[in-house]
Image (cartoon, rainbow, N blue to C red; front, side, top):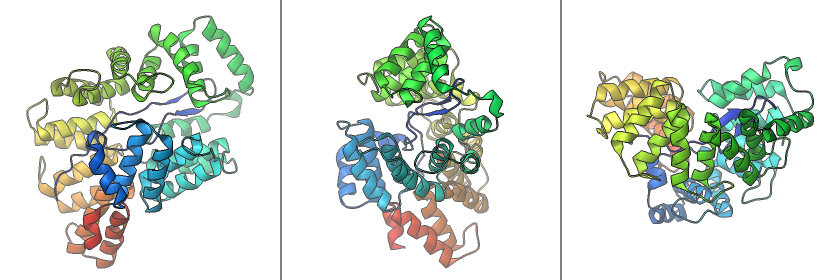
Length: 418
């Protein structure tokens, strides 16, 4: 099999607030690779118009974030829907988000739940988290803490940090939870107006999410800026994301980098990772693979799963550092063990081809399978071929057909002719 070097893109933050005890879900849709985001618009559109599900998903994502094309939620919805109807799990999850937030389509929590559930039932960790969140909030489905725990647990078992946080919150005793959110927001606003940086940050989070207040990205930016100016590290991180994606402010990569730099300098691992991405792409800063490596390494050493994977890619490719397959393998293993599907795919490829580790088809199969169960279409294709030829697993033509059909349905064209 050829190597696809699965890298990760800029991530949006997921936080729990200490006041309302709710996870902030800032765009769970970012599941594309570096190459997918950076790729030229025209080839993606051509393939999408030809009915390739993965390209339809990628095109929808480009319209969603305004990357290489003017941001257009309605077009994002249109292309996500085409891909989702073909079974693309990332598109199904992202379509749920558009319904959830009323972006590009009329807000409909029931429809959001329906699409999240489709992705979740296929093993997509983000979809599982979102299903849990809707059960948790009782939006689009009857409220059920037990169901929320069930789905959060599935997502958490795949390494989703937001799900882990929410599980902790659901396990809090009721007497420890705020009984009057409106009163809580009143006092939070009072503290924020008096200059409390943590209150300003939390208020900014609530305005972003529309939790107890009317959703207002501009007000979110206003309060986050006040907190960030006082050095509140999480506010600096979230504010950087607001500038990067153009939420409540005009999109500005330079300002995004400046805020992430401040947060990263204070040791915040998510900001360090995103800063590494910016140096890798040359967004808001001169491109520098060595600088990207430096920031990925700082984040990876703190256990940041995306940075661990991307550090592995840099060691594998010799980007910004001397090529070292053993170290690439080590970092992929750390990330894969935390549940990141891209890293699981990369680790499987190393086992399959004997890079940085003794060739082991059985281990390769096991790791490809983990990635495939999370909805990775290429991993599903590889699993299908391994079943087909009995490599790393007993030959099983029926299983081969199942996995190859799944990959085909998710846009891997070469699997359609097997």
